[in-house]
Amino acid sequence: MTSSTTNDRTRHFPPTFLWGAATASYQIEGASTVDGRGPSIWDTFSHTPGAVWNDDNGDVACDHYHRMDEDLDLMADLDIGAYRFSVAWPRIIPDGTGQVNQRGLDFYRRLVDGLRDRDIEPTLTLYHWDLPQPLEDRGGWTVRDTAEAFAAFVEVVARTFGDDVERWITLNEPWCSSWLGYGSGHHAPGIRDIGMAAAANHHLLLAHGLAVPILRETIAQAKVGITLNLSDHRPGSEDPLDVAAARRADGNLNRLFLDPIFHGRYPEDMLAHYSKFSPGFSVVHEGDLELISRPIDFLGVNYYSPVTVVDESRATEARTAGYIVATGDQFPDLCLRGLETPGRDRTAMDWEIQAAGLTALLVHIRDEYSTLPIYITENGAAFDDYVDPNGRVLDFNRVAYLQEHISAVHDAIDAGVNVQGYFVWSLLDNFEWAFGYSRRFGIVWVDFPTGTRLPKESFHWYRDAIASNTVQYAQSPGSR
Ligand code: GCO
Image 1 (cartoon, rainbow, N blue to C red):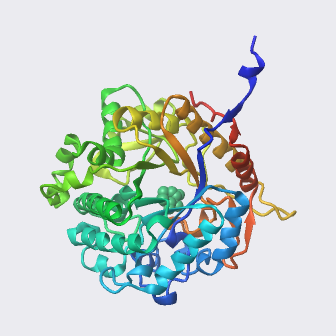
Image 2 (image 1 turned 30 degrees about the vertical axis):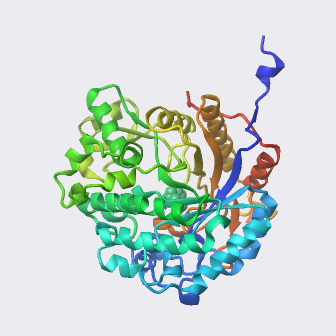
Image 3 (image 1 turned 90 degrees about the horizontal axis):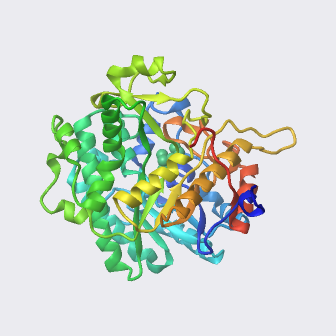
């Protein structure tokens, strides 16, 4: 009874849909002391014994600093419409404030020009976690001055690149900078203090709020957005305690960022929860939320995995129901436990694969927050790739992951969500933060430390998707 139309699994994307790839400065550049670059909190952290897997660091990384032309050619070969990269603040203003380092700007000028020469739209992230160390020494994101320093840095970058940059992203994943950096201590600067994390959360958003008008005043046509890492939170059961636990998890990861940006206020339940910690949100000044909620032009969404939780008091029940229950949580104050669904595929990060979570998240953002254009600014997966005896990386699991998630984006478009583009994370295997070089997210294999590049099967698959502006529809198991 199915017609050939309903059997056709080809999903066509809108003609203007933007296909891209993403990277970040500290993860790929290397050259950490070259041409006047100053130290960042990630240099300090990665050189702290035991902080990063295998004591890896970004001193060399993919050596993109010296291999930029080769990487630009890879992008041209892939035929992406846009490239999302970040600029390293310590390359441009090594002390965090004051003196501008022209050689740092020159490097990004070559990159921006190289992209334009190849008809690839530069999408520039102003902050992807490499805070200049001198600013951390004065309190980092726990103090207001850092937001002011960021605004001055943004002005320098905006004046330099102006209209040559197509899209401006103020911050990448401020949740990670604040909650992993100052709360759990898993990321630089490695501090474990919930009250400081909450203060960092606010100062990061303030930095965003200060940056928006600077970009608008400096660049007439600037398209400005922010990138958040968001997830679809589900309770492990319908028990009210588990429903409340999922709400807390959603509050910490999603609502502490989406509510101030789109509704101009912090969520009441989160304010009440964090009022027990100092300084927490007591650092909010009058007028800050007006700054933070100034209109933007698009939202960047990074999605990797759904999150299922129960209240910590219900761990035993969840185990009985067949879940694998985490033994603890990085934020004990939230009193919850993460669940893994047995049998569901996971990536090398141990993250559950569930593409329907992306569709649900996108619909939720549209319903609760905004109909602004959305770009998926990161999505991708780490797997245990290897170069086979024929010299190829046959990463079919990554192809499946991308196919399912891009299909999920298509589902969201079908549901009327204004998704305008997709950036795969990542162009290159790179320094995966606390996991060092042990996790490969690239569609291009990088041989560390020689730096030799080898496009994986997923690169060829993605190139075909871009060329045809379609994917073959796929759904992850158990996604409905
Ligand atoms: C983040 C960052 C990326 C990561 C990627 C995989 O989301 O943590 O934006 O830099 O490498 O997400 O973890």
